[in-house]
Amino acid sequence: MTVQATPPRVRVIGAGAMGAGIAQLLATSGVDVQLADVDAGALDRGAERIATQLDREVTRGRLDRAAAVSALTRIAPIASPTSAEPCDVVIEAVVEDLKIKQDLFRGLEAVVGPRTVLATNTSSLSVTAIASVLDRPERAVGLHFFNPVPRMRLVEIVPGVRTAPSVVDLAEELVRRTGHVPVRTADTPGFLVNHAGRGLVTEALQILDEQIAGPVEIDAIARDVLGLRMGPFELLDLTGLDVSVPVLESIWAGFYAEPRLRPSASLRGRLLGGLLGRKTGEGFYRYEDGKKIVPASATVGAVPLDRPIWTDDSDLAALLDASGVERDRGGEPGDRAVVLVSSDGASVITEANRRGLPVRRACGVESIGDRTTRLVLAVHPGLDPEVGRVARAALERTGRAVSVVRDGPAGVAQRLLASVVNVAAGIAQARLATPDDIDTAVRLALGYPTGPLAWGDRVGADRILAVLGGLLEQTGDPRYRPSSWIVERVALGLALVDSGTTPEDIVTPSEE
Image: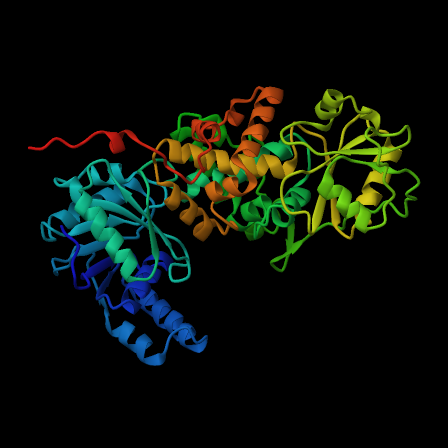
């Protein structure tokens, strides 16, 4: 089971969207493919799907006609998934059912050669469990492609507990032949991408449950302040709660109720109520003809800026100065000044009291993230409403959109980012994947502007730790306990992307 210099012969079982996509990708990469399905009609439809997709690639200029024709000639439909026809690798992409996959692997082992690798495209089942029925489980490996396969460049390589290292190497080489990017991850719930993705979604749901902000505002902050392509609630609506809720619950349960991965209890009611998202026309948003309907932003009319603004946030002060907003430039706020405070990991109330600032005249402004497009104003129950209106008007004078949220134990953007980084750091700490593979997987599969560990380094690991520490202190919720990966690196001055020295670096292998 060594890496082959020539392209291996691959059998893809399952001619649905995933199987057809895998077959198309392999064939366009010069690999001979046997495409199999127990349903002859599905096999025909899969072949037609591939031909149609290749034709579209030619039309869009992504593939020349000769290459498309050549790819089609490399795909040979076969009637039986368990055919004895020789092949080097089998990739199954059948229904997500453990028994069906086990039965298929058992049947394949009886007919394929002893060196044939058996790969599963499962997205949610244990590779080890699937391989447990084999006489030689070392030949089995997970090859998790993402849909649509030709466009989604990431592939998770998932060894079971008994998978041979040479099989993992062969799987990685096969992926590299296609031009896609392989990442290695442990056989744990959610593998790498779905596990890392819990950081954003679960914290967004927690913020929503606390009534800090609604889905529209949280999504806007995620996009404009953090730079995500899609907000967490837009993502949930796109995926559908019928898909997302079981994934959220299974990953949380699979890690024995790990608090960092805890889903929201409110999701189950939305699921039962049929608020699935785009597919039902209503989720966290309403949809008409497939188009998301965003409620109009509330307006407050013209508000006179008849109070000076006091802040010791130098970046915010520069924005206000450039917009002609009157500022109180004293070392402490005057009697009529509107106070704008920024802090990492503290509520406005906590920060104002700690610093001896007038709480009834104090609002918070998000300290982490991009302030180019949107500013986030946090208001607490004891705030003088007139002060809050002036604060909003002053921020709007800068030309930025302004999200008004309820004061909480930390800013919305802070909480989202800290959770993303902390979950990724937990994956690194448990050595479920390398820091580089974590960042690569999240960036390619989830569309984040950068990998979560690199993102934490860019913002400052010490700031992430301060946010998590403040959240843990104010809420007592263990979901915010910082990963030791972050704690250690802050103490040592190491980057979050740095694996540092490990026991393996110290222990010298014995000579035998």
